[in-house]
Length: 127
Image 1 (cartoon, rainbow, N blue to C red):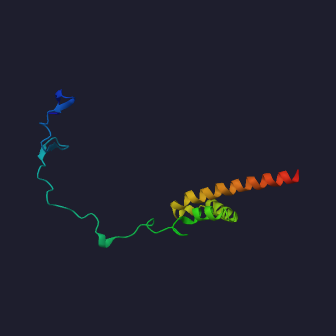
Image 2 (image 1 turned 90 degrees about the horizontal axis):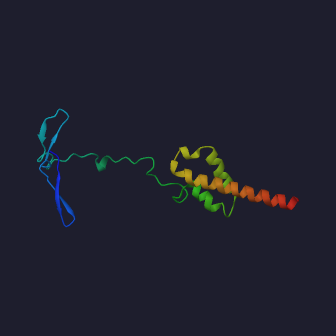
Image 3 (image 1 turned 180 degrees about the vertical axis):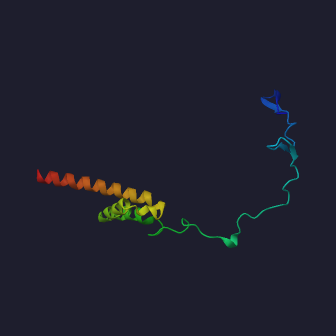
């Protein structure tokens, strides 16, 4: 029997919780009592002694920020680093570690912007 609202007092609806006493119906349609099930019984899912670090638990190279972001930041001093990271991005270097993808993409965009600026400067000087 599902719970049904039967009135409210001060804006709060009261419910009839007769069907929520701790039993459920399994797929065969038979009710089972589960109120005492699982008390004081715990199962260890993963032991801390058997911990194996995942491939993404290792810190990124270049002071932990990754090769892409490091190239992006250093590229403001030496724009050749943007082109280096752009070639790594085009060569799918980020497949080794997907965390590198954003930094490499930012460096590739910066290299594209730098190329556009250089092209505009060259065109202005020639004409």
